[in-house]
Image 1 (cartoon, helix red, strand yellow):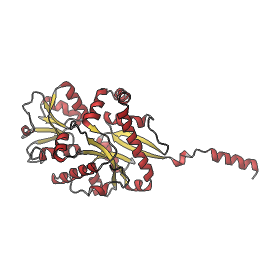
Image 2 (cartoon, rainbow, N blue to C red; image 1 turned 30 degrees about the horizontal axis):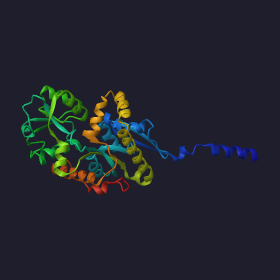
Image 3 (cartoon, rainbow, N blue to C red; image 1 turned 90 degrees about the horizontal axis):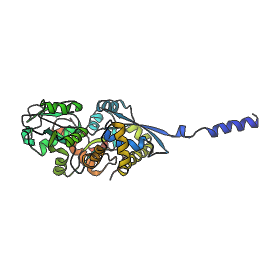
Image 4 (cartoon, helix red, strand yellow; image 1 turned 180 degrees about the horizontal axis):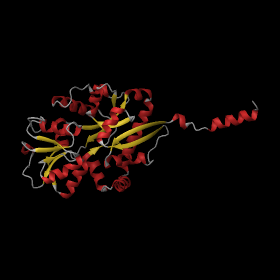
Length: 326
């Protein structure tokens, strides 16, 4: 082969982009909620970056997240803490790699609400009443039932208990409560924020605070989870994923005016909501702590007692070995 041709071929090879073969793409599915868009904003808008991996982040509603988890459509999913033992019971090696949602230290955001003129003034008045919940099988509502049982002494059996649980799509809860078809309801965060502003509904219990006081732990309702074979094959990529995800959350906390204004415009949400969410309602911590593991263990054990879960493995057996622990 002629020298000039060899040099030309070599130049082409050298010029080929190395990143195309070296860079790993991690597909991440998370809960579609304005609060999460704030935590993800820096990642999605290039404020935090990685030169090692590419992250494709997709917001999904809860039913789609459940389906995606089972189908392994994504590499990492933000999923209910209750989903881990259920998935593993079906033979899916789903491992916790980080904490998705942790109740805030303030104890607000997971309340039971009634109309402002309701005769129901306390939790004990719920006996014989209808409580609207968005999903009986979710971690959030399981924690509500645990609090009603362990803090307030109610029988929370679905059949024959002290109150009637009415599963209602989350968007329909405020209207059902306002109309009187529900006596009380567990409002999601955006609805609770609106109720705080309007005064139309008032809380008779703040479940997050009740459980923290009872057990000395802030409860965990959602986790970030990955699949064993992928985690084992590319551990450094997933460590980098967690670093970037944490950096995005931290950017939101450090640049609140910038992020909350931008996400408020994108999602048509009052920027004040994000201030309330991050300082009073919840945390998107990413890092997994020893107390988080204790909180998840408590959730699973009490869920078994309440016949919500059939069984659950020890939490430590479900945690990825390289998950950040504090």
